[in-house]
Length: 200
Image (cartoon, rainbow, N blue to C red; front, top):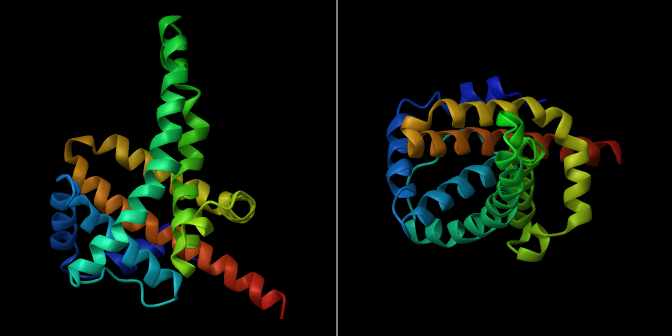
């Protein structure tokens, strides 16, 4: 079973990972150019999904990176940004009632679900590069039911990393999404392969 520690060791064993993440961070901060960064994350997850060596890919074939980045961004908007925005709106009445930190209670289940859900959507899209595959609710539900207990700790770690490293936001975002995107893809691939082997 792939673990966050194992993925971290393999992914960041490349001496040039900081430079690769710095380039991704710069691109992520620039409108339109952020599609290249999203495409890089797509390529990383796709390699892990196919069972290839877990390493940071080179920045190359920029046209492909841009094209692959568009669906990643769309899925991220629908599965992460939209639910978090709705959850944040639900915190406003509680905030006005003066309940302090408890006003953010509606965001907690959304935070725990949106990142694995986004990764699952991207993982499914990559198989045929068809948007319909990314938005099949029953397939997504089965994936989350099979993997959510395994992904709970990595997801909590991702949330903690994003909150604690806000001063380095774009670098943190890119490095975190690379690490946890690879972790999610590795877990999905492992569970999928195990189920396929069990069926004979």
